[in-house]
Amino acid sequence: MALSWKRSLIYGVILTIAAVTYWVYSETSGPRFDQGLQKREADMKKTLPRKVDDITTLEDVKYEGTKNVYWLSIDAGGSIDASDLQHRTQSLLCSNGDIARKIKEKGFSYEYHYVNKERVSLGTFTIADCP
Image (tube, rainbow, N blue to C red; front, top):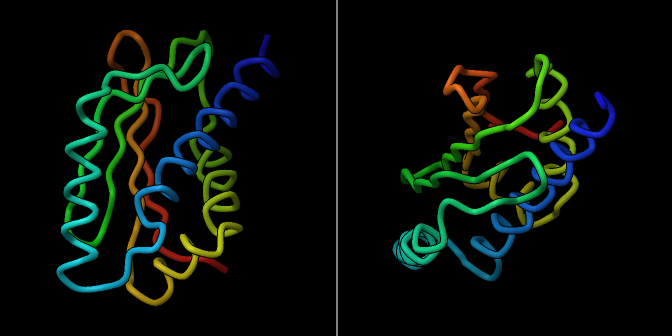
């Protein structure tokens, strides 16, 4: 059971990264970058909440100038190791060239907020650098 929800979390993170990659793909800097992210935020909000895997639901997303913020809920028993989730997310984000470049060159960051089905915080973290 524990391996199953961990795998589901990883799939959720991968799907979130795919959405982020879509958001930043072929966007440059300045007003065009901002306008593109604002439009994609509005488009994405129309589809929320959205199940990203069996136990993870993307509930909200927000573009805040130099970062994207994601709110997700997890429907799984037990506790979540937020530091492990953060490490895995950072590895996945930084392995994507477009995202790593946005982080390094533009100082862009990605913030994640996880709660359980009872709305208790499971973890919050920000990815703001790539090794």
